[in-house]
Amino acid sequence: MSAPKLTGNRCQCDACSDYFNGIQPFDRHRIGRYGIDRRCLTVAEMEARGFTRNAAGFWCQRATKPNAQPRAPAFPAHRAPAPMLTHGGDHART
Image (tube, rainbow, N blue to C red; front, side, top):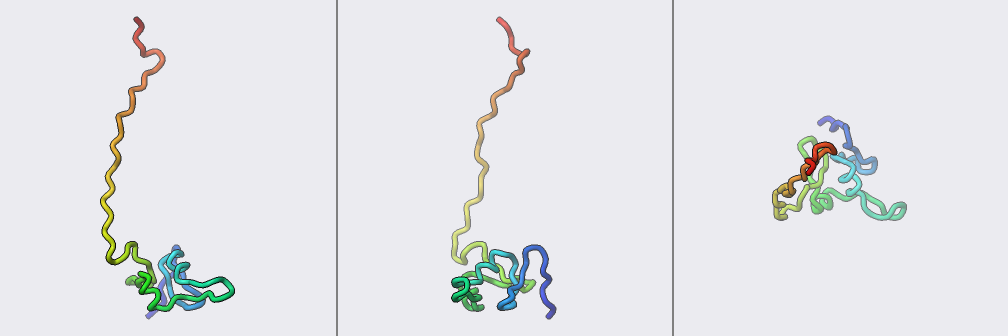
């Protein structure tokens, strides 16, 4: 299998060599304190946290938890009609 193509925000970890679909999943797969115990999550840990591989082989994070209720559809807010603007010379004089 050939290596996935790195375009846009896709990246590869220098430490574990895994490929990520974006900067956020890449950042979230690294845990621990810098310079002390920083490491990459294992495959099992990533899967437990909702990571999944897409068809191209990149690790992604699910947008929602597997058992989460779907969001209600967004409805546009109703707005009051804008007041009619009149121009200086358009007013009737009494």
